[in-house]
Image (cartoon, rainbow, N blue to C red; front, side, top):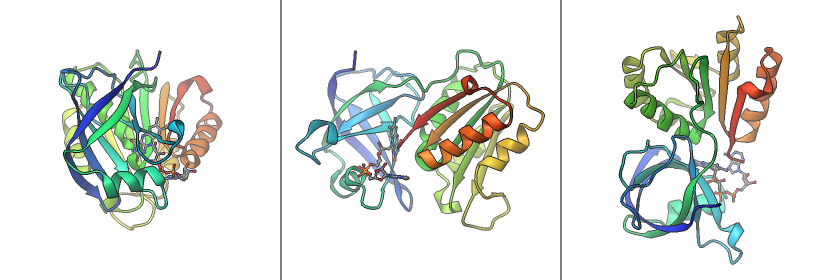
Length: 238
Ligand SMILES: Cc1cc2nc3c(=O)[nH]c(=O)nc-3n(C[C@H](O)[C@H](O)[C@H](O)COP(=O)(O)OP(=O)(O)OC[C@H]3O[C@@H](n4cnc5c(N)ncnc54)[C@H](O)[C@@H]3O)c2cc1C
C-alpha cells in the first residue's frame, strides 16, 4: 500500500552548486519520519490539472534521525516543469504535499562483498544517506566505493563531507571524477573507475543511481566484466 499524502513545511533552502539546491522539509503530521536510507519521497506540485503529471520523486539525502526533518538535493533541469517550479516558486515557510517513504533501493542486507555506489549529479543523494547510516550504526562492511561523476569541481555535491567520511569510515573510498574540467583528480566518466577497480573480478555489489544514459551504460559494462544482473541494483531518475 502506498503511504498517505502528508504536509511538509520548507524549513531551509541552500544553494549547493550552480544548479542544485538543498531543501530541508519538516513533516508536520508526525514527530518521527521513519524511512530506510536510499528511499525517496514524491512531491505533488501544482504544475498540472492531472494528478499524476504533478508528481516528482526525490531521494532523501539525509539519514533517518528520529525526527521529522528530511533533506533533499534537487537539480534545476533546463525546461523541466517540476524542478523549475521548485526553484522559482518554493520559498522557506511554504507548505508542500508529499508522499513517502517509498522504494527498495536500500543498503543490502549483507555487506559481505565490496559495494560500489555509482552515481552522477544528484544521484549521490541516496548514497549520502546510506554512508551516514553505515557510519552511525558502525555496520561491518568490505570496501565501499563512491564513484561520483559530475562536470566540474563546483558541481561536487557534499565534497567536504565525503572527504571527511573517507577519513572516518574504514575502507570507504571517495572517487569523484570530472568530465569537463582538468584537475588533479580522476577525469572522464565513471565507468573506467569501477572497471579498473574490478579487474580481478572480486565479489561485489553495484548500486547505480542517476539518469538513464549513465545507468544503461554501467549495467552493460558491469555485465561485460563478468558480473551477474542480480549483483546490480538501480534507482533510475528518468
Ligand atoms: C525515485 C526517484 C528519485 C529521484 N531523486 C531525485 C533527486 O534526489 N534529485 C533530483 O534532482 N532529481 C531526482 N529525481 C528526478 C525527479 O523526479 C525529476 O524527474 C526531475 O526533477 C526533473 O523533473 P522536471 O519536472 O524538472 O522535468 P520534466 O519536465 O519532467 O522533464 C523533462 C524531460 O527531461 C528529462 N530529463 C530531465 N532531467 C534530465 C537529466 N538530468 N538527464 C536526462 N534527462 C533529463 C525527463 O526525463 C523528461 O523527459 C528522481 C526521480 C526518481 C524516479
